[in-house]
Length: 176
Image (cartoon, rainbow, N blue to C red):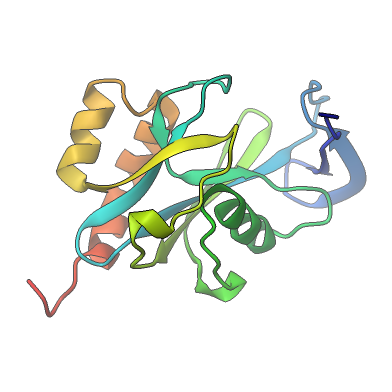
């Protein structure tokens, strides 16, 4: 299997495109920033969709939400729609994703989204080499998974920061 180079747009510290690109896996230069997108899929009944990282990946065997790096030429919403489809087979239009927050860490801008979907686990299509399992998890289970190291620290800290907004959206106001 031939490995294809992945290229990402380079942004400046004000999140303006520079017109240059960066090859994934190489160090970022001074003043260069990339874009990573993440999405919490929720069902409206108090559950979040998690996937498990496949063997051979960093943090293999830990659970996470879907996401990844935006490719060169992609907007944030194009990237999250692509990443979610690649990792789960779930299709969504760009305008269906709700932006939860944006932050920056080292050389990366992060856009965090949420998306309401009621989907049966048997209909999720995992990407071989990326993910190897899927589950719906309650907020309590997510907290337990974070405490026991089943969710890696960075995803856990993102969850804690976004939990209030996720809870506001995720509980069906008429069914409970």
